[in-house]
Structure formats: C-alpha cells, structure tokens
Length: 119
Image (cartoon, rainbow, N blue to C red; front, side):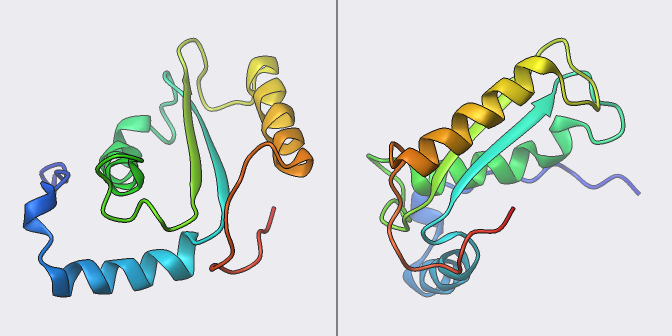
C-alpha cells in the first residue's frame, strides 16, 4: 500500500498541547546532539525521498528564526551527494571526518539536555 507523503505542518497547526508533547519527545531523542545525515541521491536501497518528509519537519522545527524547537540544542546537517548510491564515497568520508573533528574541537555547539551522544 502506498501512503501519501508526509507534509511538514505549518507552525500554526502545532497547537500548544501537541507542541509540548513533541518538544518533550524531541528533547529526549535529539536534545544536545550533533547529527550529520549523509545520503546518496542515487541510493535505491534507502532512497532519500523516503526520509525527506521527516528531515524537512526536523529542519523546520530547528530553524534558527522560526523553528518551534529552535532552543532544543540540536545541530543538524543534511548532505545529499548527487553521484552516490548506497555507499560511502571518499567525499562522504571526508565530510564525516570534518564533522567529527568540528564536534571534538568545539566548533559545533549544542547544549545539554539530551542523552549522551553515541556513534
């Protein structure tokens, strides 16, 4: 069964009670974390389009100007590599090394509130 794609709700659709519940869940899952999402645009095993609705919702929530969860302490980067499939290319590996280095050097700031990071 094909389900219709998820849509990012407009900010005014998240009434306070729903926003509170989502904020609590997001704080537990993402609070104080630094996340790098690497994807291949040509990935047929795990197509980017499958996760894109959630990633759009997450980016909307943490938007520095208008996000309803912008104070959650999540640093999120989403990179899609045009020529890559379901693989780790040298460019993706370099991006991962850069990201981990930036986190360890303190260039990427998050704040406490979530569970400890895992790799």
